[in-house]
Image (cartoon, rainbow, N blue to C red; front, side, top):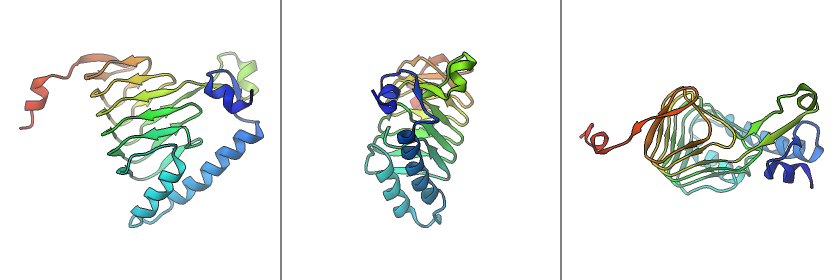
Length: 193
């Protein structure tokens, strides 16, 4: 089993010294450098580069400002995806984001984690667990999504939250660690009419 297969299986893998993984990250960094240094008027070129980098996208996607990831091919975003500035996705494992999702500035989505014992951590070993974000999700500014998290469709993650585990659909989740604050209900749809 190679290091990429170990990562996909959720096992400890060599993320820092394996030549094949380093080459894949270097290839992604080259594309990201080009994306992140384009003139703001070059939207079409930016979108085409992103679609080539990511594993799967909808037709209508927007990444404003700087974007960083490890590999790109492990990231799938749906239709009408919007990411504000400074999105970081560490995609050692699959990151699946549904349709109509909005991500505010300075959000980190991290599939990667490290062993607690220093001996294995110092050898460059890490693990990765997939992250799933459903349709119609809004993630507020400064949110951190941890390895293995799942966010249900229609949910809103409050600014500054740390998401771990499972967030049910159609709720507001906030805090560190993130907890369900309340369900989203009919009053919420009437609020701005």
